[in-house]
Image (tube, rainbow, N blue to C red; front, side, top):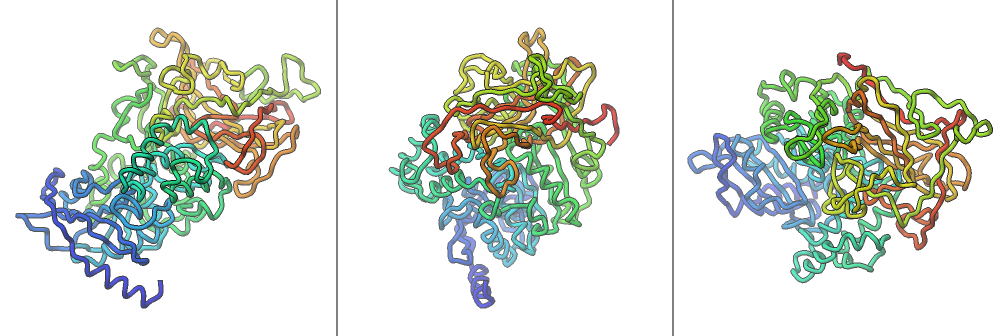
Length: 639
């Protein structure tokens, strides 16, 4: 922004009146709360963003001194004076500012995925700092997209942002969790289908909103009609949503298109402020939450904390999800109170639990899953259990990477295969092949999901079908499919803890010029009285698109029949595989609708007209030792 324009803009934003006022009682703190609703804050380009300002009051009057700020920037409706989080922090002495992001709900402008949130956040922070009720010290909080607005502001260079608590936050979108090693995570297709007609510019017309709502109701039908093309569905009525989705599904390379919030690629752009990264082993952004910690903790002089629980997206106050419980201790009982401890320390300068008591005693705090008794609880859920543990680093330095090889006969073993292709017998096959039909993809049952609404199940599930899986309705295990290769250990003779980052390194070939390879880590429970068929518990999964096998930045098709190395990065975890269980790795070429389905034709991404069945091969011999690299933490070792 030019200097003169900057002065004019700052004069404009500091002269706004906070009207209209509404009484916003509640919040359980010592102060009453007053809210100024729909303050229209201008950005540098003149677009005005709808903003609510909650102030603590005493005897019916706002506190006269300058206060620290809690800022929430959201695409999900700011609440119009009724935000529970805003009332809570205002009642505890903060001024809370909640803003609809550009083009959403009551804000002006055109919505774009994240790209405006750095500049808009910067301008919002400058406006806040200029207000008479502000001391210029801003902290941010929120989950998912709202977490992404924190990262965006933290990378904008704002001098007023002093700390952030990004939960399950949008980041590194070309690396994992949106484009995942070249594949597209279909939860964002679902997000667009649901939000294009809710809170959008198009939704301001009731008739248009109804058409878009009908489209959203028929998402299962639209899933069968991919790829999406411009102007061919009702999504054309919300053109900014249609254009972003089409471009996002077609843009596989991790390049400038995905640069917003690219923390792993540009950690030097992140403000040197205290950061508390919050994630879950079953969250859709888990891999980037731990990656962000590894990128920021060595660079920032300020405190960087990480907590990872057994949670699905945004469910830190829950101890169970899907078909599994992790025990009452897995939940954070009061999700606002612990945030207030953080803000009290870093915004108010109070001496409190930071650095001395959990969950702030150690920079890294993880929930180690898998130490439950394996029985059914009163709700019929598997008691997988677990416990909290403080660590000094992520990943734990004492974790030993151990190769577990995928070998003939579906065995998973730490003994490397010694047989070559030419020496292999029928009993010692040097490779395993399967047919992958894009018209019949392997169904998604749980995993690192968000925005799954009605098309995907989140979190921990037995890997067998039923009426809860819309595209696998019968009670048949996925392992029964011919296009799922199962490699599993013998029953364990002792407990094995796997904690850290996980990769599956495969040697593959295909009859196609492009295809996908998926991997899933499973904790196999033996049959029991409560679970007579056992329980195949998904721990983590991942995918790799073959054309991006060498680089996430550049596509390169395969030569049919040629053998290539490819790495499938799973999401991180901390899990104890108990004695008597098996460690299992399932390999396939689809996981739908978690990921878009590869048509195997090599056509441009999400712009194909054809699809074909191909034969994919996993090589597991002395020349091509396909394996999963498991970080093993010695049981009973100290951190």
